[in-house]
Image (cartoon, rainbow, N blue to C red; front, side, top):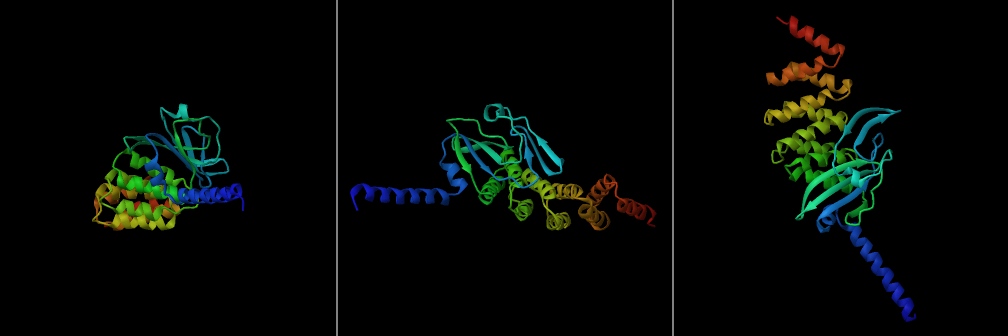
Length: 269
């Protein structure tokens, strides 16, 4: 083997090792190594998630009808985005200052505008992305923690409701973040999460405001899931304030089962 060919073989092996090392690094490690300034990464959005690439994100979309929409007024978005509207990916922009994350913004669709000072981690796996975002939410008590849950909810092919439920019950997590976890738990999960929310309401050792948030989250579930759970709370929960909250949300449901409950309560001797 001549020297040139030998060097090509060695160089190829080194490139494989470097690529493997980069792949093995977690997003948290890559963010930690990035310089201060803007740090970006993107990942696949779950079906039914759409955005205008700038300040509007919709989810729960089917046949042109979207159940939920969130708009933001990020002051920096005009510098970062062009305007196309599509179904993904989810894009997260972090701001680092003195080694700490000081801002976190979420977009869906569009494309990053060129910015030579930004560190772009590229497309990352949804499992790695949600793991990182939920770890930020669990350990921070600022608005960044609340903001970190939202993009995790939008990730494709990842089940995060057990993590949200664990976060909602963890007294070491700030109250605001726990309430946010409860809200997204109710928005994003299905039957299993509804059972978890009902358990959370029934847990007298939990913070009262967190339990109130769980009642509200149940009111946002599809009626076949949320209404029976709210009726059980209204009839059986030992906390009169939570019973009143459940009755209030049942009154907003326009569900005939709620009317039957009201008649039963009003006619009870």
